[in-house]
Length: 408
Ligand code: MN
Image 1 (cartoon, helix red, strand yellow):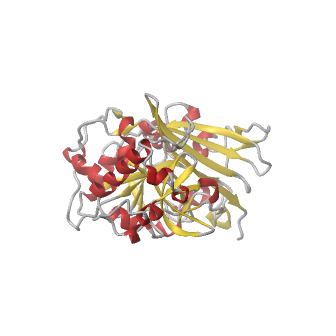
Image 2 (cartoon, rainbow, N blue to C red):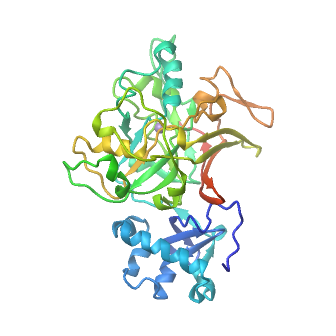
Image 3 (cartoon, rainbow, N blue to C red):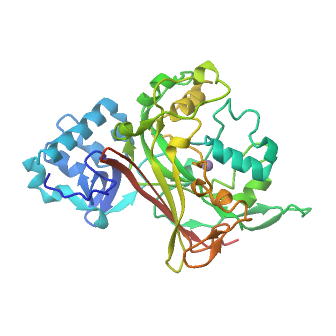
């Protein structure tokens, strides 16, 4: 291949994720990441490489129109690109304008998200939160092993990596206080998650079985479900998260296709007691994806504060989608489904500061000598993730956001 790609690049020839980018002289359009570069698909369409696809599909501010062409088309397109790159297709090799350095590009929110749902599918996370917020002896609520618990989030405040996040203001009430106060959140947190993007719509009344779920999932992103724990603790009874979550949710700019993630399928944990028939599934439905969270202070020093893995999830994506649609709820192209916080079995694999610092009782040590129980103004949270098997590496890049001070 004429492009040289570093061995530890997330964007290997095996990946080829889709995103929306622009540069000083290129309007927003569809790109595919390869190494440190972006393949400009609109430019490639202009060279006549995709004769069966309307070029306008590639000159859009989101991937929705491309995804709407269907998996048959988008999969073939990705495989063509893979083959052309591997074969050093002269049309690519001799057209430097087909490639843009990632360093020169601005990445945009890749999807017009109609609806956003967030699950709560890590048994370690749900157990940790149950121990801290409720009863250590009965940490999991009675429904948890029977239902992939979730809530409807807010699509309007989903932002792309790099967008700053302002500390929210809201109602909080301390344990010993009689009345709530209005103030800046003092317990601002992140949640390490992945999200999947719906690639095929259903009609109202139509169910998606676990066996056909993969037809409806286009690809995945990293997701940070920013959370204000003090606002959450006061507001969440009885209907669940509301303003503690919907001020911002960040996603990574590159959508990694499910086909690129195939090599990383693994078995999930045993589910006991047995789930209801509509939630049973066949095959390997979990994914071995290494996940990392790094916290950078405003002074610049960075500390890795979490190493987790998507394979730990108790409920898998097929079950989440089957459950989401079992009542006839329809899904649409571009809907975003968050996995829920991805915590593992060991304390260094907990996917939120709430758990890592155990509700403020065990502050995290940073490399610069300071400590954190929750996020401070100026802190930057960066999440990364990749699969690696038999020398094949497929990664997501990063989702990053810096905390700006509240204005209450
Ligand atoms: Mn969440």
